Amino acid sequence: MGEPQDPSVDALGGGSGIGRACCQVLAREGAQVVVADINLQAAKHTLTLLPGGQQHVAVAMDVRERRSVEDAMKLAQDQCGAPPSLLVNSAGVAITVPMLETDDDTWQKIIDVNLTGSFLVTQAFATSLLENGKDSKGAIVNIASILGKTGHTNKSAYTASKGGVISLTKTCAAELASRGIRVNCLLPAVIDTPMSATSSKEILENFKRLTPLGRPGCPEEVAEVVAFLLSERSSYMVGACVEVTGGYGM
Image 1 (cartoon, rainbow, N blue to C red):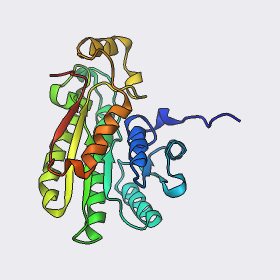
Image 2: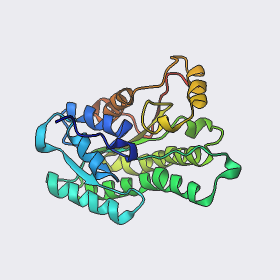
Image 3: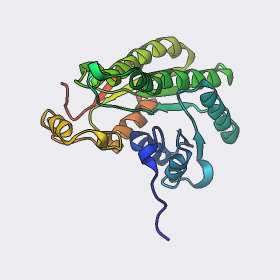
Image 4: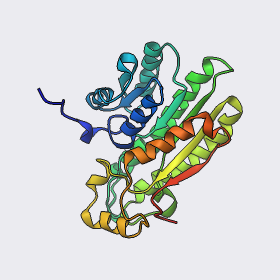
């Protein structure tokens, strides 16, 4: 029998792209990983790629729905014996459409996943961790985008959502730092993921032309920075927005 089919095309979080790479790097570093995705099959596929055997867990989570987020957080805590102490908010969706042609459903879908989702998961994570005791420490990394700073034609909803993630990161960082939870974010440019594969060849070639390194990034290159920001090696970084762009947008 061959390898199980990778179902990550329809995945939004730990079952695909940057989220999957983060799970792999963190597992390599010794973390017990909870892979969360709206596509449970994709999350389970990620489990097959992780070192560490049966200690890791896959859960279904729709980041747009508070009940789904809270249920997944409780399931993770029950199966791991303690609330998660590290969080990567990687669920995201992008749709390319001119601003004047963006309808309400498109706008709301992108805002709900990228921005509301980051808020709901962060709130549930922090609540769970702080309820575990005042000595609990944790770290959060939000995956924003360099386009949240620069903007980009035909991506009004996406760039607005990612600009919101940057602001959300800084506000949560200010509120949670004194309680032992550090919050930072990453601003990737084009990364070779199923999401970027939906962009036109023209858009991808233009990004490459404007990127000093002349290529898209690899998910693992983002995940390595995520692992650093979640570790004690970055203990004095709070509210930072780290660009991982190959030089795009300098």
